[in-house]
Image 1: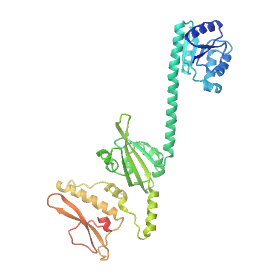
Image 2: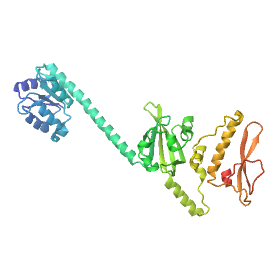
Image 3: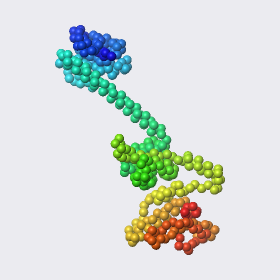
Length: 383
């Protein structure tokens, strides 16, 4: 299809000259002799390119160009490329302003045939690239807005962080679930926020056991209000286009409603008297136990003890804290012979493997056995 070029110039000789050059090059020329006529022909012909003279009576080239670019009437024609014809003594700052406003090119009079055709061809090429880039930018902006709206409306907490755990992004869901604002969370440690060790959240990923993601259910996270919120958390790597890992993505879901439904179902099946929420779902690590007891997960200083006993002392301290948390405030009454007290039972191997769990033992009073002094309120907890 033959390209149409609109020439807006008050000089008839210029029209005659340019028409001859363009026809030989395979273009069709549309003529207009002032700015107002030219704008009308833009609406009528929708040309592929406009050649606009700067110096014209009534409405000069600059005024015509600005109206074309800014008037709502010509909105659908704003991507038509425009070449401005200027005099050699035209002030450079005016041309610069027009180029910044979207002018594609300018050509100083007088000019030759090849010079005119080269400018026209180059303008077609550069404008095509310009329009394509504008389309891409618009598509990217639309995608960005869509994703931002999606994240804002998502009921889950979406967190991205550096490999070290420093939070770089958090969605509005974190405020809905835990009550923290974005400013309170950004830059903080994700492990501190979730109150769980790095090993629990990313252990399988880092060991290579999970190539894509790690799903952790039943983690209890302390909200800003101090309430423990049961959450299901999915952790996966953030990778760039080359597949290189540069961060972590966490998606957290509030499981409160699910836990409540489970509780109601169990109450219906077994009755309220026999239903007890499984504390073992909340306490799986030493850190979980500290969180339930609302103490810092600090370890005692055992440096003064013989080195061969230090590891065992630390392990015993952790077990005591875990036992206290699992018992949920229960303590054995050694004067009550009717109260069952349950102990984990261990076996010692002389081969060097140390203690290993065998079963549980119970007594209704104080015990003189050689079993563990970790006492639990139920057989299930002891085991």
